Image (cartoon, rainbow, N blue to C red; front, side, top):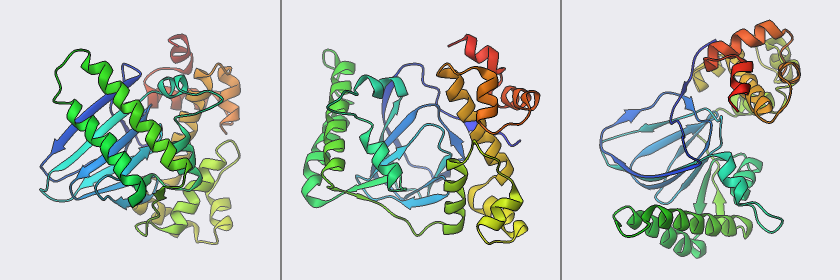
Length: 280
């Protein structure tokens, strides 16, 4: 199984950064255990997430859910300026009640099969003002600045979710993708707990098996088999963390043999399922 780098370890439930890079750079495919929000401010950047590539515009909001495979390409020497928030699932769940849910923007984007939100003119002023307040907070060294930044971020999230619910944001579609590969990715992710094999996938999508395998690799950077195993392992890890028995998680995620699952799990995460459960 190919190894994909897990970047950006989150040791607290929330981290916020203001970053500017000037060198051209293409990142490798990677994933996070946490959700990530990038507020794009400036640059010439293409973001690729689960087979779809987006050319960003200023004040675009990029939503990357935990375990989404993604990379970005900073395409020239124009400064790449952005605000990045790393958010543990527990942080968002803290702000979920019967009246509101700050993860609504992630949920709506997933339903629309996109990762990039773009503001319409009538919503832009409010969100831009919230973003600018966040940006200025990084040069503020006053009393309780870390707390102040968190409050400003929560204010931004409230405005973002209001705009999402009021349909004041454009859910960006993209032509920078192969529709067959995107459909295949979506089908795999919806059916991780079922039997998935190359022949059946090729038949379902009316495509030559060998052409499908080459196309998937060229468009995503990894093989179909590795992608399926990888996503199943991540799902199993979430189920175990939620308290599901390890053996049940193994079979519920589509693995047919526990020893195969355990070896793959340890190879990918560096610890056995039991060791990871014991640390929770």
